[in-house]
Image (cartoon, rainbow, N blue to C red; front, side, top):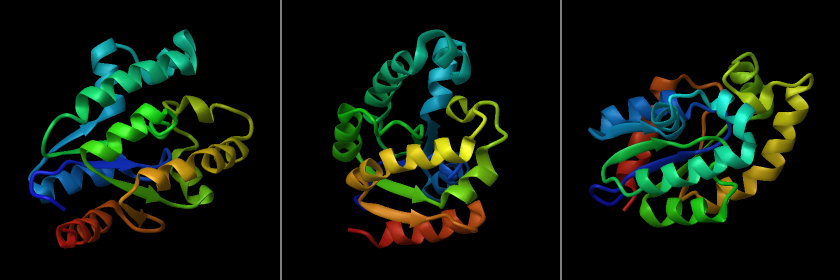
Length: 173
């Protein structure tokens, strides 16, 4: 990892981008930023509300604008939204402006972590496992495309994940 290089965490909802990201930022002495939280702060509305009112397309436009802004900041750990990799423009800025880490876990683990969270608009369905499986099938190639490193968070707590990931990042040159 180059000195001062920002770290961008990508992966599906529930994989631990925010919880691991906060701890990783502390270990690196970087600022931590969550793109979804920044969108909510800027709009004064929840992600679920934006999806309801503007649809996914409206949200994705806001997300693209926010990612363009945030990825220009030095020395941050950025937790992206699960669908941030959908737009080619986002994949490009994520790859060019920092080091991307794909955090991964299997669908059953992701469901345990995220299925009952009402702030996950794409999982508000009668069949969340089917929806999450479809999202992973669509998005995983993009997560892998942008990632310089793939890190499995399966059955690991966030503190140990952050510590192991920190050690891996420091060894990269």
